[in-house]
Length: 261
Image (tube, rainbow, N blue to C red; front, side):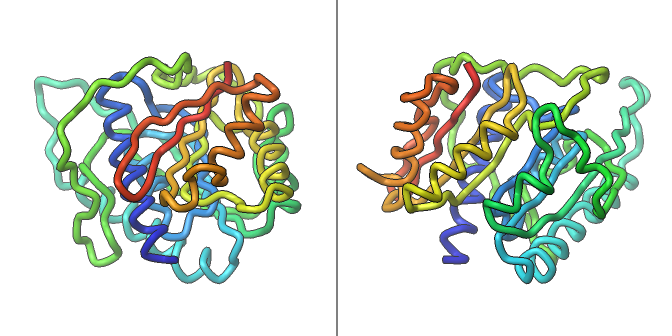
């Protein structure tokens, strides 16, 4: 299961890179949460792309302590070191440095609304977390492991995709306030319909209007016909609050995009 989650995370990062290059997505100044984070590769990528706030959540507290936190901190430290060694070009303006807020959470779906940021309820900032300073400059073209080796290198050619209706490509306004997240990243979702409905309710509470977006990468036997992702799409279509489409279809997994209409 860990290797499947790792592969899905790398696939999701590659899709996010394509979305940025195609002008469909920007992390700059955005509030981001990665649900079911494990190693936290997509969340790390969001940090490297200039997100102002990144929260990492997993159901398992041991995973957060032993896997997520060490990997996230190692990658961010490596990126800071790399930036500090790069001389500033006299032909370019000074880099803008963002002070990122990085938090780690563990808990099941019922507990998450009490700790994660909700729309119109931003009291979570008083909870204990880790705060790291970071630059929005993109210093790495992939996510790296704790030993510094580069992972998730780009190998596929850029390809065009249709506009989704979301305006996730816009940079966040520095004056924007309020709770919720601009971007939710995920590589696992609940498989039972009951849990899936609870998850959908959480997404509605957390995804920030008007242009919030959810990227979901899942192994194909989880998202095939009558799979969890398509059940989620059925819930989305029934209420009409979100739009959805398949961003990328691969031999063994798919990446879906859900966005507020």
